[in-house]
Length: 137
Image (cartoon, rainbow, N blue to C red; front, side, top):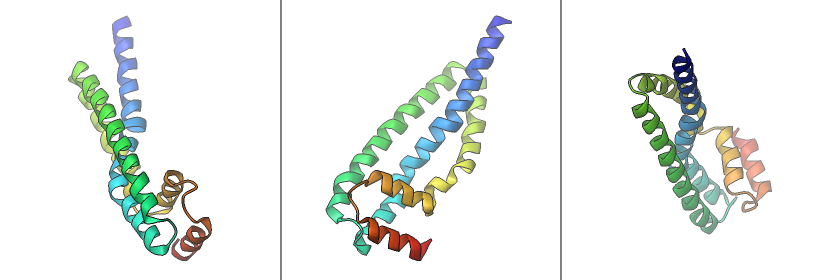
């Protein structure tokens, strides 16, 4: 009985880690190279932020995202291998469901604007960004 409870707790933690941890971080990293990069380029064209600021900060954010995502995937795969065969099931289902739940991270929307504001805090013209947001969202 005690071993089954430990396994159940481990499986629940694997589900939670996959759904709330791995999937959002992984999608955020993909977004750094796609949606956020396109948005930052648009902000450079609009004069909201200097091109040099984007060139200085975005690659650092991208590298950090890749390192963190790789580490989280390594931990996830290690846990799945250790708890196989149920580990793959306990991680696979929440992984797929998480992709559907958090897919808005990789879409061009108001969430992209918030992430831009967080990534480039203090480096952009707030007035121009506000004007852009009002005209496009």
